[in-house]
Image (cartoon, rainbow, N blue to C red):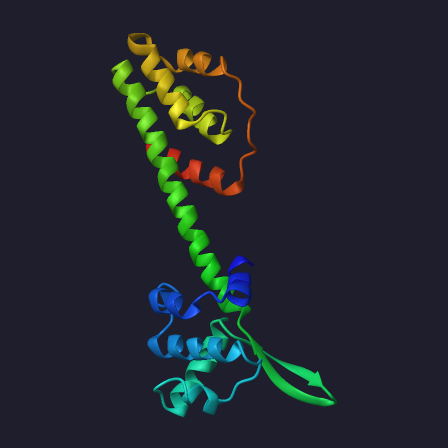
Length: 204
């Protein structure tokens, strides 16, 4: 987990992230404050008390207790028992919280990728339809979909060929022009395939 490594080895400011993103993480102000306190404690030891948290937040002990229970139930904090020197003690870790933060930013990147992909596809379709003077036929849309799905050609390469084709533009001609420069296909991942399915459902 990248964000865990950044936190543990490079002192990533989790406090700033939580202050900015707690609403998107579906945390209350109290939960966010207690979680920040727990991260502060976690740097020093793997145990905590209500008193140790109360020194770091402006909340009653009851509110702190409720926030801790909620953070555990929401899977931000993991508490377990540890045997040490013949004694049992309760320790905690914040891996779940770090995973949720990383998942949030990974989803942001995926959303941005999907948006760019959709913009690229719509732009290519618009260029073709302007050149042809008509809407694209289903098989033509399928061909364009395949170009993006197989990552055979880039948006820039396709657009360049459309412009070069001029008045003679057609999907078949552009495809022939594109194949003059053979590129190694890149295996499509599940996220891209799902994004393409959704985009083409909207187009059709």
